Image (cartoon, rainbow, N blue to C red):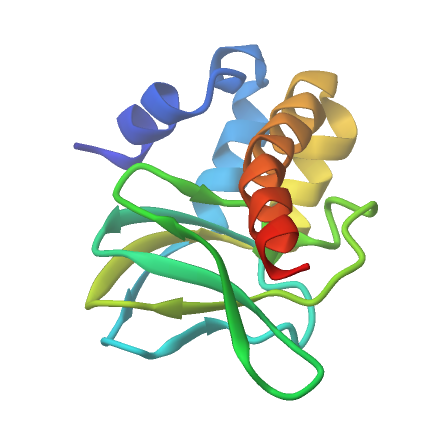
Length: 146
């Protein structure tokens, strides 16, 4: 499947974008491969958006005493929005992302996704809805810890 077809399938806002903005996202997308247990995002800045093509990613936080707290896992077709925290200014906690198994992802740069998000309300809404849909999982885990 071509990248354009993939984006058209996974991004509900894709048809609303002007061709120049589609091209900008396309040009700022890279295929990334991660080995088992390899860090994908270590909270050292804004990594951008990851879309899992194959494999599985694990998002987690570190407790004050260094213990890992798994928030949720991403499977093929899932989108990692929390690694683009600079696009979601309301996200103020540190998350880490590792490949649980060998994984292939599309990576959209934070600047390209942020630019499109600032231009289109549909993109900003999509980003927020995607992040919010995961917060119920995160809150359940936090309740279990407390």
